[in-house]
Length: 85
Image (tube, rainbow, N blue to C red; front, top):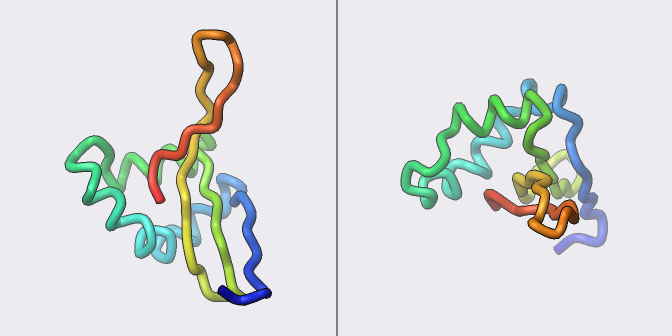
């Protein structure tokens, strides 16, 4: 990997214009979910801020995307759960 790799969480409003690029990276994971999640569900939850999208960029090139959400454990602790990568 490049030493210039930058990883950050996209703000929800940035997911809409970037959706074509994000979909290219996330579609294989959605397919592997075998119907547990759909592309439209991912887009809706990212745009609405319910889920978060973490991206790794090398310059302007999107190298990876991971979708997460915060859930509350039985103990009351908040846990970051990875949904798609």
